[in-house]
Amino acid sequence: MTDEELTAAGWRKLPTRQFSTALGAIWLRGEEGAREIGLFTTPAVANDHMGMVHGGALMTFADMALGLAAGEAIGGAPMATAQLQFHFTAAAPIGVLLTCKPELVRQTSQLLFVRGLFEAGGRTVGMADAMFKVLDAAKMATIAARSR
Image (cartoon, rainbow, N blue to C red; front, top):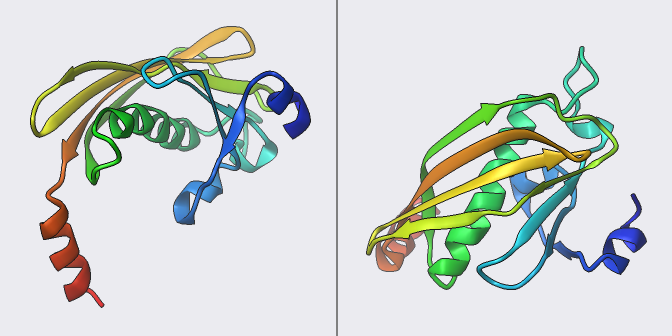
């Protein structure tokens, strides 16, 4: 699937930086609260000996996909993954679009609970749930300043 085909299907490419670029382009479509997150699987995310998507890549994608839903719910405030659990149900092949429709399950003043099913090639390849901790922006700025 090419970038042009994904764009024609209503997807838009998200900007990624630092570690997130290791997966490749992350794609997004839909409205806030009803998003679909996508990753076109390439050999760069393959397991060395099986030719399928590496479990670590699936978990990284899960963290990003579920984190996008959590981040939207809190308006982009700083947060961190407090817990992430991924259940592998099938191998994800290379050369297909891996997708997730994250669902915000519950939100408190400091925690967000999100879950999602992960599909590739028309098949469910996993399910994940995560908990994200809302961080205090002032404390984060102080920590960042100390680390310089």
